[in-house]
Image 1: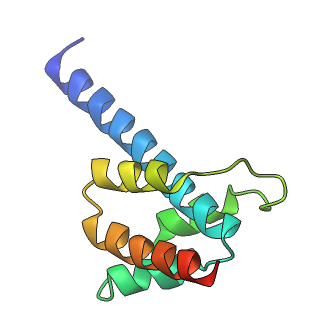
Image 2: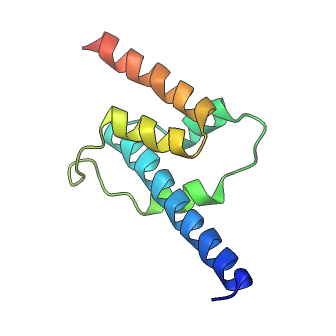
Image 3: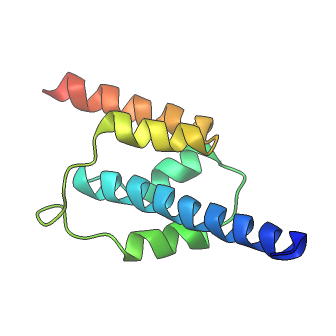
Amino acid sequence: MNSKEMEQKIIQNYQKDEEMMILVFAQWCVNHDLDPFELYIRAYPNQEENAALKHGLSLTVPKEEAGEVGDSTLLGVLSLFGNDDLAFVVTEEMKKMKEKK
């Protein structure tokens, strides 16, 4: 494998991992009756519509069929990709949910 092929493989792996992070975020939102687009816009107000999030949301399942996505799992995945602003917004929502209980 030459360096160009290796570079391409690394990029593809990163993109697959990023898609998984988006799916975890989207499913967590679905499971908690939250709008992932609204949370994303709060975190990144200057960004255009996020096609990757739209695709990720299309892959989610209804919360009745979904497995649990733990809060710490979501925050860990967001952290791995440097989505600190989104993690902050998510943490705010987690606090609101705990206050309602």
